[in-house]
Length: 306
Length: 306
Image (cartoon, rainbow over all chains, first blue to last red; front, side, top):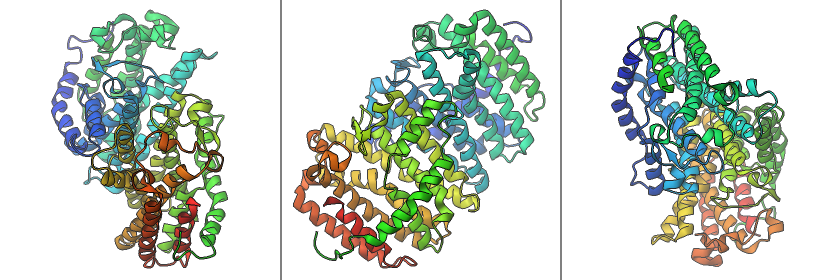
């Protein structure tokens, strides 16, 4: 990666992210049912899925969105945790044998490997249900209309026009690449990854009372981040190792997945990442209250392919 | 079944139910993504699952709840349709090979048999997501606080303290009946069936602006209906045929399921149905605006085992 890459490599965002890990973990612990509570095996498996050492990127984006609107991370913690539950649901279902059939996630057995398939289906269902329900209920200090709008915002992002739709097209493309592979790939990335990341950025601002224009700018910023994230992820599958990744490397190639490097090659993938980085930087320049955080975040994501 | 059973056999409720079928189907058609829209296969499968000739009992209960609060069925149609989507999601996931492994539902191949397992997982996810999201968005004329509360109400009912929890305990009991089989069975029935039926009754009243006392009475009424429904369903598996049921008969026995007739026998099952019928009738006597509809509904459900 060349261009605007500074020596920090996203240090400011890394710090922001690191400072949020403990409060987010505590909030997840508070909001998830206790592992001993009936049905104990299901509750234990939900916690196994959620407490797997994830970076908590999406909660951090909710906090960043709140800060851009003049709010604070603390004010939106329950919603940040809810979004992480929803993200985790998508991973648990994606890993199922009928879908991506993954044995490893973050270096540990996936939920259906550690428990069983039925439990993995129910864990995903339960995390999705709890996540959306929490958005309607918390934070209690936020006006009802905003909590209602939060459910609608996130629900749209993860529905068939967003995350689930992207996942469905991704699976279809695995059987046979579509004739219109380039625009299909674009839709898949927007749906399966960028939609939830954009919603995370917008959600924080919505809950903190932002106007429509600021919300739209955060969503646009988040979409570029999401597209960068997915291209970097596809590249890592090609150039990474199973040990580095904590999941099986080279799976996309073997599964004949429609990915950016598979369709366009690694060089064009890097160029597209650079282009998205410039776009994201432009959009970020209009975000208030965040100082250098957005640019540091862009740097953080752009360097994932190293 | 003896006792208060009139000659009508639930005719008034049957009429109420029949009058709602066309508006509910039209509402589902309006709210579901078009089958041709990308991702087309997923959208087509969602419609296959939803338009399978179901009785639309839960939407009718939403309408009944609204009427008890002085409202009308028309006012709550989107929420009624949302609840049917959520009910359908639970059937699609329950039928999966890793769970109940059913090939037939309402006399047709289940979603994973007609399409494939991955599609069935995503269809369930999509219907759950859309259902909860719609509750936050519609009906637009209902105040934001009630729509927010609707998501919270239904989300609780279908979470791990409700429907998903009941399903999880049901699966655990299939492996080995728990030592406390009778209370476990009670929890399973309350969770996997009664919670959503109770929420349906309460939801209509909530949206129509009912006070807490009326909402609680409708929820209590719905819970008895749900328990009756599940016991009757368990009995039908024993005494019914595959052709009558539209699903595989005798499956519970073969799967060593913890059911009311399996644990207590058919005679005690009938007695318990009668007891619940009396309880439901008592609760129903305090419901306003409904004339003989609740008693007719009780009759309708009690006769499902014939």
